[in-house]
Amino acid sequence: MLDQESAGSTTKRKKLKLVLLIVGLFLLIIIGTASGIGLYIANALQPVTASEQPVRVSIPQGAGSVQIAKELETKGLIKNSSVFTYYLKVKKQGSRFQAGEYEMKPGLTFEEMIEKLNKGETVKEEVIRITIPEGYTVDQIAAKLSEQTPWNKDVFLKLADAPAGLTDETAASSIPDNKNLKHRLEGYLFPETYEFKKGSTEQEFIERTLQQLDKKLATLPPDWKDKLKEQGLSVHQMLTIASLIEREVVQDEERALVSGVIQNRLKKNMPLQIDATVQYLFDKSKERLLEKDLQIQSPYNTYLNTGLPPGPIASPSLASMKAAIYPQETKYLFYVTKKDGTKGHLFAETFEEHKKNIADSKKTAN
Image (tube, rainbow, N blue to C red; front, side, top):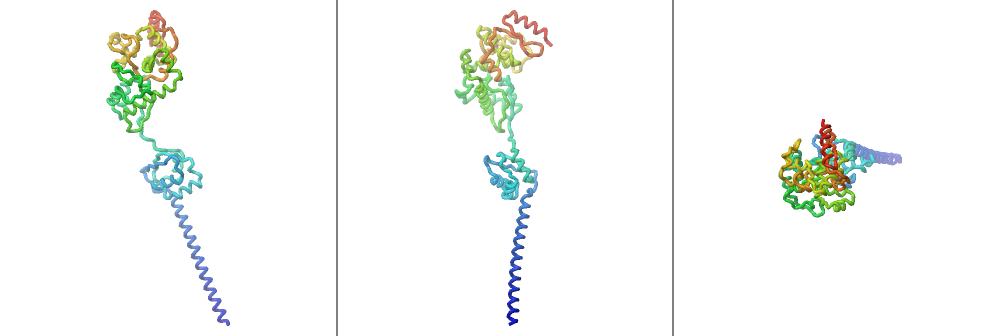
């Protein structure tokens, strides 16, 4: 009887040991697995091996955190996209990420990548940046393009003389078929600062500047075309007058007044006698025009011809266009540049007054 009880106790102890062994092994497996996962996550949170070679990353518009994380993992910038996604969730990040093309160097921390994506530190594309000053001629623009861009001067000039694809909706459609025009697009290439993608062409530059002119004209008061009709002017003639104003006037407050003088002389069929139209005949402006210069035979010479020259002599600013459309009412027929350095003008209604102004101007010469 005792032997049977002893045997039963032994069996129970063996079973208990087996259970404890199994439980122990199970706990060891759990602990080991947890430790392994912990180590894996800890490793995934660390930056990848650093490199000085940047990696291009494209973040599409509307991309979510999961998609962005997968892109970063694919590019080798993070070790595990799921860990990065969970990190974003814990840190409450991702909602301010901005789309675009990024360059990131391997070795960045999660926080550094998050900062870049939040700030939208995208790659700035290489661009062609060019500024066309107000009052520049086509020839001056050609020289500037040749000096500061990859574009070819001769190609540009050829396009400026024989533009293609002009539609009836554009201001450039008003260019008359006049063989006396020095450059057909003179006055139509709006002066401004432009940026073009690397690889853009001379044709794209011309199209953009023509479009910009149309955009600027669209900002004028709604009655501007009616005002032109009242004066019997076409858009081409308006731009011609605007270019004369641009080359003659420095002080903004005088633009409309000089425009009024030009209109008065046109109405009386008086030669405009604007020096800038003679300067236009030279490759480079002269410091001082001589009497023989005023006798140069050219349809642009407003000393020898009445009316307007065949077309604009430069690219006018919007301010000069407004002055051409809305001239100031005045009785003045003459003006002379002051010699005191202000670059303002003295105005006169009669030739006698004009001669006096010329004398007075010379007295104030610096």
